[in-house]
Length: 402
Image (cartoon, rainbow, N blue to C red):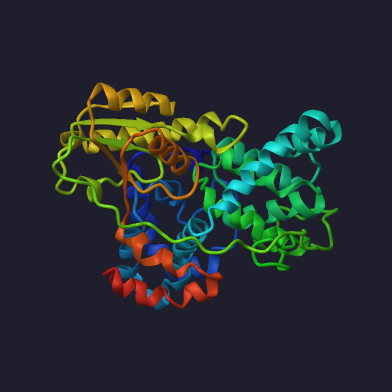
């Protein structure tokens, strides 16, 4: 698994840009024809492996899309462009239905209690997380994820399907397992992808992991026996109604201003435009993703990217202190007599919850969103295929070359 590990062992923008440059030539027909094949952890050569960097906006969606479109055009790179917009769609969808995340969090607390009191559930959960189920491909992927922090997207789908329909484990615990270990773990795309496999996102539509499909797309590395032959959708409730988006906040330039960094968005040029920053603080909220502690590799990865952003923007933001608790942000604001705090817009998840709670306690935190999100998220009102129809217009509207 050395090659995958090496890519993420030095997490910074330089590494991300090198990986982008390596992938761009393959983002057209090569990606289209080979993207569904998982050739193993040392051979993820036909997918970009950029998601951990895009997730934190060490690379922005616009620069990735622009690089690919300039090389290939939209028709040849359509599949990759759609994959980038899938993550955007999930974020916009959840941003307009934040109660779905709240319900998932409540489910995890309930399941945490059940794991403590139900030995059968605890044993099955532990065996799945440790990769001791005797389903060879599943066990391999569980260990690959824990060792590398990454899984091929097709393997994520197979894994989720086996977790839900063969092992009969709660989907929420599987989503949590991913979120604790994936370097690109994202509240929106992770939660909603697991719900989709379970038949809860597109109601009644499930994803079944099949032996022949796994055999074909792992290049005969696996041919698992004992998989479920059916995938009956789990019972669920209708989606909540749409909430309005609030993406057009503007800080006041005449106030004493602090900057708050978080791992949802480490691209700071939009925030720093025209503002004088008096003091800067950063928080690593990775452990708030789950009732259980996140993998140390995830926490370290986030810390390294925050440190890298702090160095890249040092001339404008000064020295950055990284903290773990929201209470430390309150103390920092008081010590520096700040009138307002600016930060990148945090999509639904731990950082968004933290910012809401801090504002309720009296801080004045202004979230500044990206034009990309302002343009794309409002289209995530229904299914992806309706959203997909908007991609060519979004490419033009955002000024990306196609």
